[in-house]
Length: 479
Image (cartoon, rainbow, N blue to C red; front, top):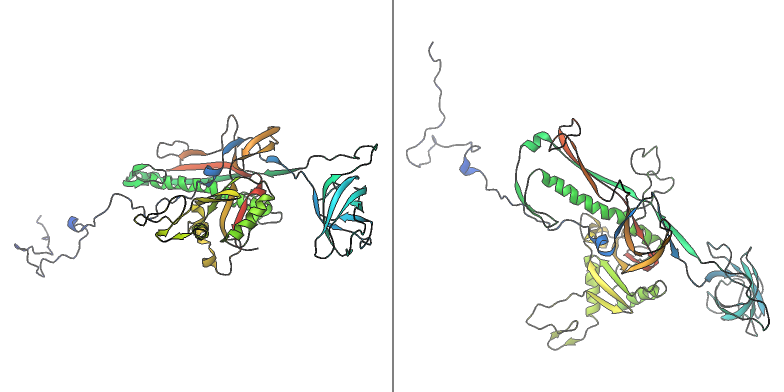
């Protein structure tokens, strides 16, 4: 049987390198000299992409065995009431009965024989001092005999007064103070949340190995193949461990998250993150960035009325950092040889340092850039210029007191020193849920199921405790 056909050809090679219509090639797929040049090393165009580090800098981590964390914080040593009224005739009265209308008051802390200062909350009426002659704790009322002969000149029943105790006075040979006061504590609690993530790769993809040289955010260098995505999942999960502690909010009653019909599978209780706590019971600067010493004097005046913590750290975004630099630079005198900052003059032949690391005005303030507030994929994209008029709750910085405080730990049953910010994670002798990772599937060395893949699982259960929130200051836009 003969061969039926003769294979044809499409090209006629030329003996010389002369471009002809017969030796022109249109398909370059398998021509090695036309393959693109490739770089083995991955180019790090975004630098260090992680945003975590804040809690590692200012806090600590410690185990907790319970599903709820409770602690007690000191109340004020002295008592002041700011919503006090009277229905009696006050002008030129020698005595008067007052009613305390402050919220969350269950039995006033004023006792007969104590001396009080009564100040009107409006201009006009005079300030008076008097001695308490009778107290009715059931109705939160007390009666005062004034030390001034003319009583409360120009005072009216329409006025609201501020009252605080400054001492007591008794006659000779009389009995002691009637009644006693119990220490006032405020009980706070938080609940840990479970945070999860997962990376999966099929067994077939694992069989085709492609190498790439990388430098990772944790400082490691070398070659990775399919596990590079696993590594980025791990870094992303570690960022979420911190940002969850910053941004978490409790699920309100009646919300969709708390409704088991709408959300039957996933977390439905939430937690109290740092921003939520400081915004609720801390100090809030609602005017964006303080840019003058007068602005900081207002903040310092508030700190005087709270814990008066000597050292504080300002974690700020880039605009806030520049505003502080400009404010401090404006306080400096300018010499003929150039700008002079800090302890030493900046020589004209050296690079001029226009930044400041901190300052002291009543307290020590140390400034540091916070990457979380600068990263455009996180809160760094929520800026006043980007949102225009919708700037409410755009956070620009957070003032955190340095050091630790003493609180009564409800679990330990004793006083304990704790950082103002710290993370509690669930752990026992047999289960540590601080940072769990495990491999499932049937590929990559795993042999736990018939799934033709390797799954890397991540889990943590934790909550952040913000102690002494009255010593924190949150800087944001919006009232």
